[in-house]
Image (cartoon, rainbow, N blue to C red; front, side, top):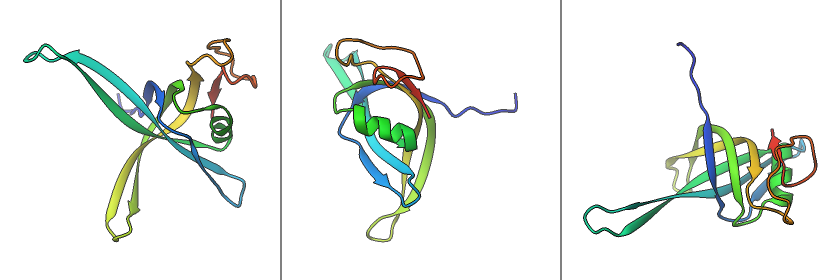
Length: 132
């Protein structure tokens, strides 16, 4: 097989409000974080240990608008996207790298107004699945 795949699937909880950047050409980029957690029992202590990972999400244009309008801190989301590492320079002139998930599709797993999760893609209902 000569092809490659760059695909991420996450189910997690939104960690904060989205930060939107608007450009002169009407394009939008939104950034937010999502937490995923897993737990296990430590062999040496028998105690339950929970580990949380934070993931940086990037949404663009229509998805950014949808996230800005409907996604709130604490919402549980199903996310599909791809990994991208971005290079940037900090205040001290040091090169830094950030790995982000470019969201291509998502679904609400937190019921909004009690209606639950839907898989329809061409509706304005915030409980639907959305693709970029």
